[in-house]
Every structure is written in C-alpha cells, then in structure tokens.
Length: 510
Ligand SMILES: O=P(O)(O)OC[C@H]1O[C@](O)(CO)[C@@H](O)[C@@H]1O
Image 1 (cartoon, rainbow, N blue to C red):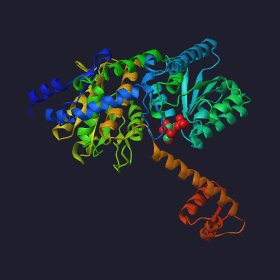
Image 2 (image 1 turned 180 degrees about the vertical axis):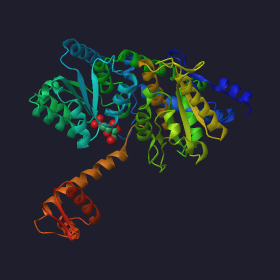
Image 3 (image 1 turned 45 degrees about the vertical axis):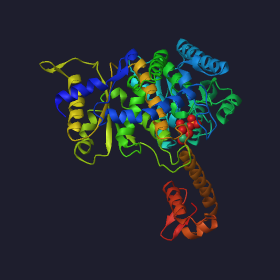
Image 4 (image 1 turned 90 degrees about the vertical axis):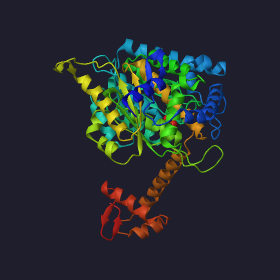
C-alpha cells in the first residue's frame, strides 16, 4: 500500500464521537468494504439485541437479569420509573455525602476495599484523573487478600486512620478477598482505638451479607448497587462514583462523557458507530475466534491502568466456553498492555519482529500538558511521546501487524467516561457477533468453589496433624482425600508460616 493509499484509507474509515472529540482510526486493520458488507446483517442483529437490552430485556439469560449499566448515565432510559428513581437518588446521595465529607474536613484519606469490578474501575479512574496537588482526598486500595499487601497500605495510613474513610465495595457482599480486607481494616482501626463504624461506608446490593453487617454495626452510610449492573460494568455506579467524588473528581463530566458516547453508539449506521466499528475490527483481527490478542497501548501515563481495567471488561465478558445456543466455542480475546513509549523498551521487539499473534490498540492523547521545555529546536518531551506512537504504528504496519488508534484531546473526566462507554458497548456488540452471553462469569464461580474446597481440606489437615511426624500420604488419608499433591502443597504453605513442622519424613504439629 502506498503512502497515498494510507492517507485515503485513513480518511475513508475515520469515525468517532465529535461531541467529545474522540476519533477512531481503523484504517490499519486489514478489512475491506466487501467484508464490512458481509458483516452488516450480523451487526444489525447486534444493534437490535443492544436496543432490547437497553429497553430492559433479560439480556443475561443464565442469571435471569437485566443489564442496565447504560441507564446509569442516562437515567431517563431506565425501563421502569422505580429504577430511574433508584439511580437518581443514589447519585444525589453520592453528591451530598461527598460534599458533607469535604465540608466537615474530618477525613483526608479514602481506603477503598474491593476486588475485580469493585476495584479495577475505581483504581483506573483515580489514577487517570487524580493529581496530588488538587485531589480533595487521597485514595488508597486493598484489592486482594494478600496480608503483606494490606499491611503495606495500612502502614502508609499510619497516624491518619482517624482521618480515613473506608469504602467496602462488593456487589454480592460475600466476596472473600473483600471480606478479609474489611476484617483486617476493622482490626487496624480497633488497634488504633477508633470505632470502625464511624469511618465505614458500604457499597453493595441491599440485603447482602455486607449490607446486613453494615446495618448491624451502624456504619456511617450504605449505598446501593443494583442487581442489574454487573461488576465489570459498574464503574459509573456508586462503585466508582463515590470514591471519585470524594477524591474531588468531576463525576458529572464522567457521566456526561459516557452518555455522549452512548448517544452516538446507538446509531444503526455502522460507519457512524465507533463502538460497532471497534467490535467489527476485533472480529476482523481475531477471526471472530480470539486468534489474536488485543494489546492496549496508551501513550499517556495517566492511562496506565486502562489496559488492566479492560482486561476484566473484555476477558470476563468474552471468555466463554459455550455460546448462547449451548455449543462449545471457547471464545475470548486476550488483553494486555501497559503504556507507551515505556513498553517499546520491553516487549515491543517481539510485537514488531516476533510471533504475529496480536493486534494493537493505540490510545493517543493530543495535548501534552507538563513542561514545554524544548530539548532541541522545536522538539519537546510530548513530541517524542507522540513521535514514538506514530513511529511504532508505522513500523508495525510495515511488518503486517494491524492496529487501531483511538485519539482524544486530553485525559479528563469527560474523556475517561467516554472511553469506558466506548469499550463497554464494543464488548456488548462483539458478544452478539459471536453469539455469547457477555454478562455472566460461570468460569470464575468454578474457581471460587475450588478455592473453598482447598480451605476446607486445610481445616481437616490441621486436625490430622499430630506432635509425631506423619507422612503426607497418611495425613491425606486421615483428612479423607486422595489429592495427596494438594495436601503436600497446603502443608508446604503451613510449614512456611510456622503452622506445621516439615521433616524429610513428613509433617507434624508445631
Ligand atoms: O463486587 P463483588 O461481588 O465483590 O465481586 C467482585 C468481582 O468478582 C467477580 O464476580 C468474579 O470474580 C467479578 O465479576 C466481580 O467484579
């Protein structure tokens, strides 16, 4: 393809959301008009499915749930007046609560405890939009059950726990990692002579285990999560908005950015629908079978966590064994990436020259910000950054590596909302194209059950341990299992934590 061909193709397929100055360039994916025409009936079907979903259909058939994250930013679209009222009253409660906290000035820090969709969105938004000089409160996260990780965050809050507000976020209200984080936070407050309830806020479904705990212990406040919002699409519910409002971020602009993208991506004219084009490009690049990975490379430090956020949104939504008709399909698209140009000094070598098993999604931010220092005549740090992006895009293309480029003017609240909405809808469209349910996660449930089985086995192993050394095989038999390997691995962990004694012959009680 000549340089003139590139220019013409770029102009021909450029789309975007003018209301938020977002552009989508798909010209470096190798598709043609004939392929687009062939996909048109499938994408029209996806539009119909999406419109039914937005009208309140049971779009998650396995769990018999509506899927309503689009209503969060346009409550007037909610299919029932009670739902609209719930969204609006929760939003008002968030605004009022944050304003009150800021006004009282008693809290300087926020500790957000959650995992998966109850952490990745809040972490991404806090990092993308926060600034130490302007944030009204500092935000910290527990997003795991790693005791050392938790201790590290707590030590960063030492001396300020009395000024720390704790948000415990769990849609289900029963996620073990979040529960453990909550218990460890409670005990840190207790050790500091503080009443945890005076600092604690729950964000969960009404009636959940967490909701009952918060109610029983008279926590400061409870915010509702809705049954019809999935964890990975919950950033624009109380899950993400409360922490953002406390941090002092413009949550109305986040919602407006998302709403603007929603409005445009409801178009059934494919050339004017960037979310549909994105989904179609994923299909073209991966053969509709996940044959290539999605590498997400924002050339902007503030967007570093976007790829992590997208990892859950895309992979938990699209990674499915069965399609909607029950056929085995083993679907999904793998997502990874950090940021440019940093990653050019890490794995981009393989992308350019090695195995061609990916397509790139560049995120380009036009305004540089920061110090306009010129390193040489007319050349600033931001010129290097953009130059590296453009150069890498070209170099990859030159070696038959495909890419998509999304351009925004700056990383601000509007654009962050816009990016979230763009990818949420692209995921929904792609799921329709490959006929899967994007809104359940049966595989994760299996992992949770397996972990519970391991913990249960550990209890029996502890009972089987005695002062005299027993072989692993004996302990396994006494614990009532044939999984000798798992028994050994559990004992190895217990011994490393001085909860069992390991000898060459086996294990004993300490
Ligand atoms: O908000 P919850 O219910 O604690 O769930 C956290 C995460 O766990 C999952 O259910 C699966 O692990 C995610 O889908 C979800 O975002």
